[in-house]
Length: 196
Image 1 (cartoon, helix red, strand yellow):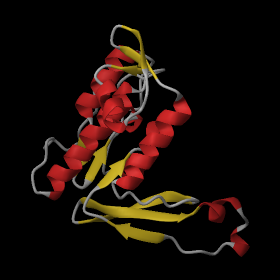
Image 2 (cartoon, one colour; image 1 turned 90 degrees about the horizontal axis):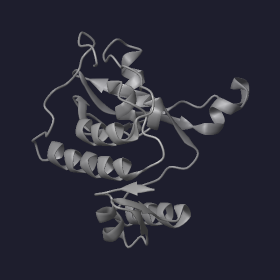
Image 3 (cartoon, helix red, strand yellow; image 1 turned 60 degrees about the vertical axis):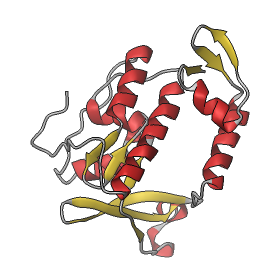
Image 4 (cartoon, helix red, strand yellow; image 1 turned 90 degrees about the vertical axis):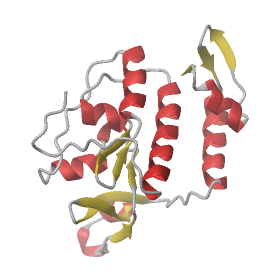
């Protein structure tokens, strides 16, 4: 289920959908997901299977990459999986890890960032706020999707995914602007600031 204006993204990617109510659209999940993944791959994304986020690369008071490891390393006994993690350095990191907000929480554990935890479900309010608050939360780190809810304490989103698509598009636009030297969201929340 998607709320307007997310149908524009569906149109752009050739994802078939139908309008079930004014401003409310449905698409077949497997078809929509596979076309989203395909479009991301066509745009140049690299997907690393069987990997997990462990930590951030953090220098000069900014996020400069992600530390990853192979997923089986955490599932098998340590004696047989002594594999060092790998750091992937980057000019921009995007936390799209959902309610877990894994990248943001790695900063919170170090008292660099203060998160609020998501609130109770309110679909309309949440979808609008998720899009509005998508952006750079700390130098070098953009949040998108449900990670935004966790970071800012806004309501859970619920059953529609329009906000996810529009939030993802906004995060991509923010990343492009950051890489070209200008940021849409200049406010960074460090540990002294309380999320509202």
